[in-house]
Image (cartoon, rainbow, N blue to C red; front, side, top):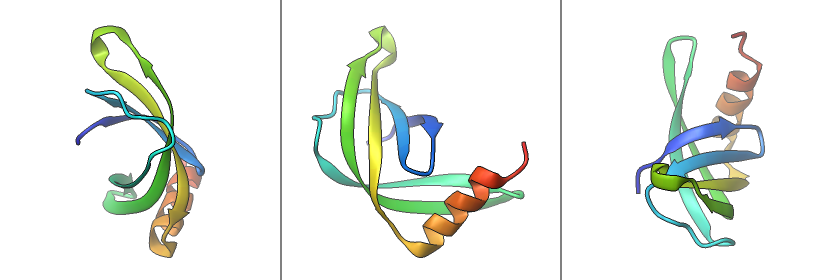
Length: 84
């Protein structure tokens, strides 16, 4: 399923998706961040949290990171500290 991100933190990703996701489901997610003009792939195991219908826009769902591999964690940390 494709979705778009609304918020990214070191511990979770909030997405907007076209369908409702059941709370508590463990899933693998993959997404990209741009760091210094270079695209970095992030892969993580996450667990779905609250899922809220947002009118005709879709469903806002929190994905809490359970496991992030070392290269992805390093890229995520670098992205979080990158100057705006």
